[in-house]
Length: 479
Image 1 (cartoon, one colour):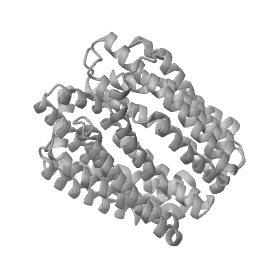
Image 2 (cartoon, helix red, strand yellow; image 1 turned 60 degrees about the horizontal axis):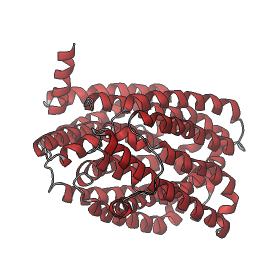
Image 3 (cartoon, helix red, strand yellow; image 1 turned 120 degrees about the vertical axis):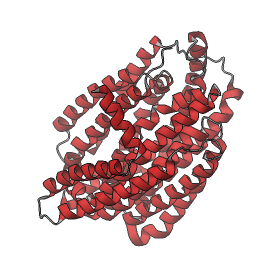
Image 4 (tube, helix red, strand yellow; image 1 turned 45 degrees about the horizontal axis):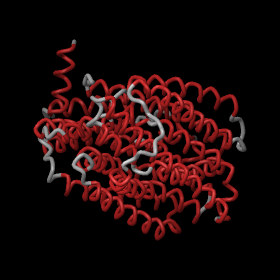
């Protein structure tokens, strides 16, 4: 297989994730105003519930398939046999997940009022299973995924504005969300034949695959509990209005985190292959470049979001959701912890087959998150949920780094962090100056972003930050 440029993959995956985020950014202001806090709360609580069953159906299959499948992608017979085994295991886990879902809806009265919305969301389970998106990650085929995303995002936006017209249309909104994923996954399954022949088979080396899959699944479960426990506990201990308020902060935070991690995601199969082929020097160099770039982009994003949180909420959701401002500022701090922890998990520990460390770290973080939520949500509502996320993300990052540093030492990290922090101070000063100009919300936000970006680049250039110098050299060479 011809190696695809990591930069091209990063660019395509960033475009795909930006487009996936443009969909909620375009629609979220409309949806939050039409559905209101209660309708949005029902939608997101139902979605948070079904996410547990999506995880149960997926187990740890996607991460495991990428790590192990990268070794077979040059041999069509081997990758076809491997993919068929993984797909068949996924079918069994999907059936089990549906069985547990129906039992849960029957025995938990608290879920009855959400049951129809949950069932609509549950269609994602079967379509995600047949979608086999891990195939495209193994083969680093981001061109097809990007084009597919554009098509279905456009269709979904059109459907949303036509059919979601009042506060009772949250079920329609859920259906449109499922459609955006369902159509993509059907096409995925059909198009996957160009890479390998996937079929259901009972000839699975079940014992060989299941142990690492279960360990990764346990880690993913801890991560999901870590991520979703906020909304779930808020829905149980508070009300749908509080969930709706918190959802606004989480949505904005998630959008930015997804965009920032787009470049990271595409590096996982490449780093897994380098580590598996024992190309340690190349692995360390690539990992160092990626992590330094993530620090370079995440710090200014975190700082900028913290400074203009109020403006962003007003622009995207309206003044009725201003109560989410403190939550969003807290979550913005979690960005650096989340992205750094994710890097060490997916790019260092998982390729090194230290998924047990990832499991322990995420379990500890999830427990901390849940305990803090239970203690503080009754008193501080959505702000307590945001605070618990910051603490849990920080703990997770520290544990990951402690073990990850034994595998790879990031070159040039200290100077990069120092210069990036000084550049972020420049962002804070710029945002303060713009704020006191007395502009309207839109102009203040746009001017803050443009001037802050300029200030950040100038400061890092003057401080001779290696990342910015390297990027400018590449730009000059291409011009």
